[in-house]
Length: 586
Image (cartoon, rainbow, N blue to C red; front, side, top):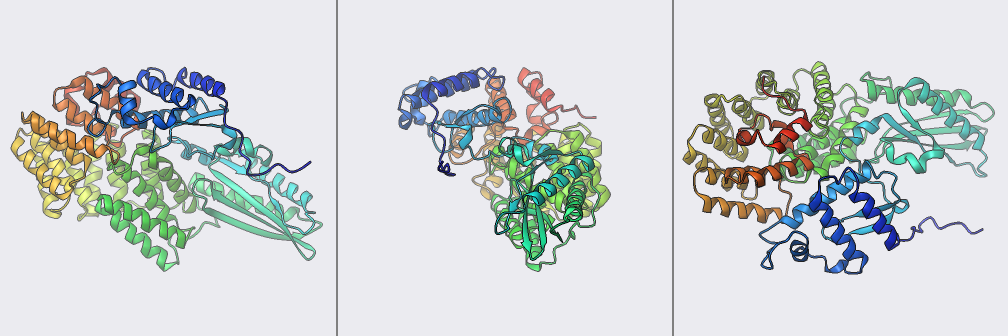
């Protein structure tokens, strides 16, 4: 019988199967109470099935699905793009949760509105959904070991080595182990993969295994053993034991004997890492993108160096927090990089801080985040970023503003020239409603770095709370000069114009925000803050709910952010506060 082609893809699902799958998706819990998204999905799937996928344009969808007038202009009204992003995120969530076992997949690729239908068998493994990467650190898949002998005569040795590894992992760890026979069905659940090979060298067999991070593809650890061909058992056991030591070291926080040194001996890698940190600390869009580039080059120079992975996790997270990229575009990269950083150096405060930040900002798991932050502080109490992010991403959501103030002050004492730490100290004072202290700290931050746009954005909010709207406008005009394409600046300017009783200017600034959303990600929180200031409470609350779907970073401060004081009784806000398990200040 001829061998089946390895590249042959399963046929496209039939139209009836697509319709059946659509019904299943729309009836799911994931799409419950999402009537507009259901209508959107139903329309584009039907059009594609009937051969009109190429005609699915923004104007057509705006008029046919969302009831816009014939004068609808997609350039000024982003409703289709916004809803398309929400639909993509909702479909992704469905297929990572309820629809994990579905045979037919409906996707909405970026850059267009024509859906794609495929069978699960021809799927490229999707990036993990929110929080999955960290949970899957407890799953390891064993791929079939390769028999590299001339006549492929080492099958018995390979089976023995595989059995020893499975036994050692099950007996010595709390890991979920997926054996080679189940790889096709369960590899998608694995955070780590073990590959291996066996080869002959004269009358001996050489066994090699390697542990890799499935998402990044980076090899985290490898080992090899030589053994007599007629008695390989001891070598198999040593390999299995070494693998268990490596994995448990990365999962329980104790350094194994084979753990790599925390500092790379590759001077180029170290220099690239330091340059990445420099650009990351600037907290500008260009700086964050350059940071990713330098960290990736450092990883290419030394794939066993933990710190660049920590840097990547931090940079990807900040790209979402600053609205440069959508959260869904960076979640998996940030989580995977943080997991790799800890696995490579379990004694690294930087790695545990990155992992804690992912737990907080992606998982909304404050208890897990706090454990990691406190562990990082035990490893290095003088790492300023730990104190900084512990305050902002963990203690603030838990409502512990007094403790947050202590940690942000500790961060500033450790890094007194950091613009972002200085700015965030002002933010903590603002959340505590200590407006005079917040104002003084904003002034200090501006003196420290007069070209730092986020300082002026915070200054405007403080001045607004103090009732000095003219000063708030002046601060934002300066911020706009420094960061003319920042969505946060445009939204803040629209908001302060509305608060100042200048609705025409507010609408102009809101139009600028909509225009920006056509070419880049804009957090729904920005739109929410503007609509609330314009007095459009229902529309503002709808945008807050959308921010929950996107899991926006700004939501971590929802319970204490003064921009939302006027809608604390809104059902959408209450539901989101409960979903995040946010606490009132204490």
